[in-house]
Length: 570
Image 1 (spheres, one colour):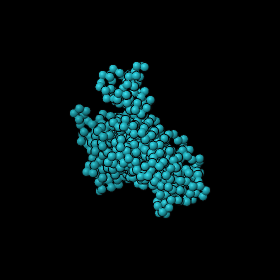
Image 2 (image 1 turned 180 degrees about the vertical axis):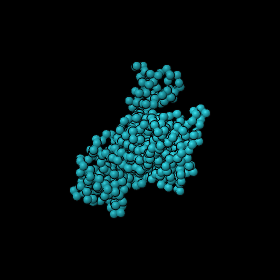
Image 3 (image 1 turned 90 degrees about the vertical axis):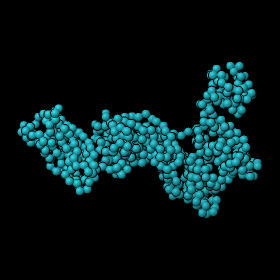
Image 4 (image 1 turned 30 degrees about the vertical axis):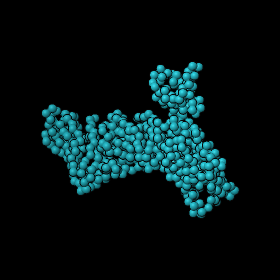
């Protein structure tokens, strides 16, 4: 067991016989899939181009998502490339990307020239460490309040000695099996054979995406109940590291080929080695061919070829060769296509020393690998090791997407929000938990409570839509560019503090000559001293530039008067 650190997960991919990855340009090798405990359902893999995309002397790889979950997520990740002794070959800077389904990271390109030809045991290891990046200031404020809020509960879950009031709609969103059982019974109460502390932990997890555990036995009990009642997100000891091995199947052949009477061999002499077979392609027989030649520049030379003798079931095959003698050697690699019968291997000068009996001993090493198209490669991959870490708290980060789907579907909604020509379906317990203003509407005898409807006339529909999305999920559909001030005003009016804080941060970080006067006016209108000070400091620091524009003429006389007063005091 390892100590868990910030939902960090390490995936290690070991590729044996890496030099025999025969893929041509634009053809790739896929790692086995892996998943993070904190992002259940999201599947990841590494996509590797052993011979690059545009340049065969490069190795390119990506981190990719392969699931169909529509939720995007920000991930921080870092790659290391090692040899089989864990010696570091490359270390790449940490990056952070937002990954949508079927989306890859930026490509990493490594030159093959330096470390790769001399890989120890021909094993390449790619290690990727990644962790989800969330906005804790938002999520931690949004999620717990739902569990603490007992307004509008409509279901009771009972144990032997306790009763828990919950919202049926939250069960629909996050524990559909219990919702189905209640639906089938036609009842609002359900007795479960579960210990009270276990059910309490499960309910907290359903509402908050967080479960606190006191030990292995308790975690095992919670996990068992989750399985029994078909809880869609697994609850188990987090896996924090996994090692996978992919092995390119190869067969090695080595022998010594004696060339007798070498120094007296005439030009155009052709010799052949013995015939041999390899198990990878038993239907094919092979031998080496020796040819004595003459070259105008080098004089007498000899070439070595590898040849197919016969092939009853022709298929492509990838071969690496090394021919050596007396400290001289020549290495090469090539792909034998179905219709090819002979490939050039090496060329040597004849002016070399031989054995005392005029025998040249050629040491021949050949490695064979059956060729397959990159989509059909069946390289053997298996998990080598999984490391788990016991932790007192287990998180599920993308629970917010469940509530977002609930908002988008309008399922089991009990209130309508009418804005101009648009009507939004919502759930009282969620909007009341997020907004004191909505809570007051439905907890007191106001018109909205009687009609189960809220009419809003002073905010645009797309702004209310974004606000509701945020109230359900803690995320925004669109960038705040162009909407931050209007969303800020809506969040302030309906007292959605988490959204107001997000908008406030954006406005303070994006002050400019074009917007600073408007931001100052919004801050003044909503009595936000913090935002007002930030806008004023920007104006005071850039006053020559901002007052040379006409933007100051667009704010109200009240705000302009307040601004000038502050400048006089300064």
